[in-house]
Image (cartoon, rainbow, N blue to C red):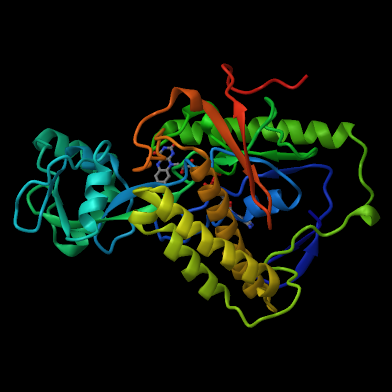
Length: 372
Ligand SMILES: Cc1cc2nc3c(=O)[nH]c(=O)nc-3n(C[C@H](O)[C@H](O)[C@H](O)COP(=O)(O)OP(=O)(O)OC[C@H]3O[C@@H](n4cnc5c(N)ncnc54)[C@H](O)[C@@H]3O)c2cc1C
């Protein structure tokens, strides 16, 4: 990586490093889910541009429950909720951990309501102490979530609360590209939690642990491997940065078009091969258009263009991997393949820019494969 653009100053800065750790988080498609609008897959795109491999990208369709028109995707407390139709009938099968698909299916045709009616007085007190920010949104709207029914929705969290990311090939969190390391949500978390993470401390434990390992590995690499001379470096970034021609395509239009394929429940959460293929075809066309014509003049425009390109790229790896896993496993549930297939107990790998590829790799019993 040689040049970086700062959105604040619009200045372009050259950075030469002996090794790089990608720690730019996952990708939640600018869905506005709590804390995730900074996670646009930029680091994943950078890694792909130098040839990195991704793993588990089919496990990238986490959706969190929120009160309607809110962004507070704190989901743990919905374990105390009952879900309802608008007329007050209980929505059978709906639930926070098992039963989000039921909520999503119902939301396609009618509103859904929730009430945290299974928390007794003691639990209610503990809940307010435990996660005060969960209650702010209700207090401001004059809703008592323990006694009132409130409308709910679901927001996409993509790979942030999914598990897919840049593949790590040894216990230093090295990637398939020499000198490139990955940590946290940018890296695959399959080694610690398979095809489903949800919330919980293992995510930040992984971020801290993998960050330490990757940092150590990168430092060691930079000190021991031959330094590439600055004059030998070539810029690798293309989509959104160095278009072949400028077509007037706006980053906001690209993001909206990508979101239309990545966020709807019926495409990404309630997966079916035909619908996923349709969404992928749209993203492929979008990629062709943006890689030819999307760019920006100011620093801010270039940041937005890169985000748009990265979201589209992540979406393509995600849907290619989804189609390569013809079963239901972890969070990748397919209506056309509703059962787990023991023969597919493997990783789905992917990568590539204009031509996305997929392959499979055997799983390993240890946390990571150890470098020889
Ligand atoms: C609502 C919610 C609740 C959660 N609750 C828990 C929990 O209770 N316990 C738990 O362990 N985990 C939880 N997680 C998961 C946890 O937040 C993540 O696993 C963790 O934040 C990952 O850390 P990270 O540093 O890899 O990524 P992030 O925290 O996403 O940080 C990535 C950083 O990279 C920056 N960045 C991105 N692109 C660029 C770029 N191009 N240039 C410069 N900077 C860039 C971003 O601005 C961001 O600051 C939760 C996640 C969500 C969304």
